[in-house]
Image (cartoon, rainbow, N blue to C red; front, side, top):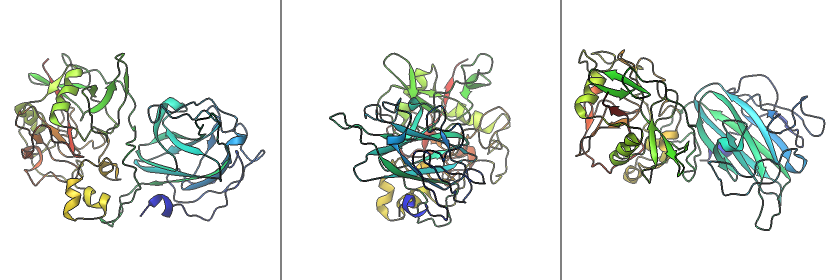
Length: 417
């Protein structure tokens, strides 16, 4: 089932040209449907659909109508890093909305006959801040904050901009749902979204690199690692945490409030640490950091505490993604949509109870974490299970070699002070 087709229903009447726009009460995660009118005189004062003065979407779900032949902005030639080589130099209409909780945001656009427009989601009012895009629909995990949606006109091979009318609709999903055999999202596996920017790590503890805590005679990342791409000129670019790195040109960062990197093998995890001047932790270091100086089973103590860590998703994400528990689904563990489900992979540091007081977060649950064991070991469990292969910090998986990767494999780095 495509949620993009099924969820966009409502009672409001949204009409208009380039000024067509959602208005009404409720927060951005409301389930109410907005109504509004537009056209040459229907938009609120000061809003013209440009990057500087975007139309405001005030409630979700929403439906708005527009026309790129009436748009006032044509400054976006392409969208980076989503689609830097697609010519979208025609006129675009820009909308702004705010998200108040972690969840899944979707949007779709239906164009009039002979019109070719695409839909883009951005984390800033800038075409170089693209999170994801789609020719007809898009969807991505989101965290609280402002977002922009741009409906832009495609330019064909002969330089013709195929502008015209469209209807844009969208909505928000904050829960995974109760049916474990029904995916709540419609996810495009060919377009893993760029949900992280290029953040700056906080200073490390004395004697430690940035983003790291000092634990006895070694340093360790405070958070599970995210990745950035290292370009040819050594500048940094966003990398999707749902995409398997295919080269060594990625670098690890330890930052709060981002989606940590899954889909990574031990070899590439070690290279990403090395690019940051760090290394993978050995098993002794990892265990000491997780168990704290007290040697407890869990980072927070000896007894299991439900909800302290991200370790008990009720529906298995593989079954829910493929809406099946048949044997074939377990050969699809690298599918980029698995960890995009709501109530799955959590932002780093978003479980404040999952720490032992030394400034380290998510050492159990969220993602398995590779260590430096040359035979291949990852530890700590993930957001579905921290029990099958041992409890909490004692959870250890040795069944895979160092080139294995799937949606649940992540890492953090260590370093010598």
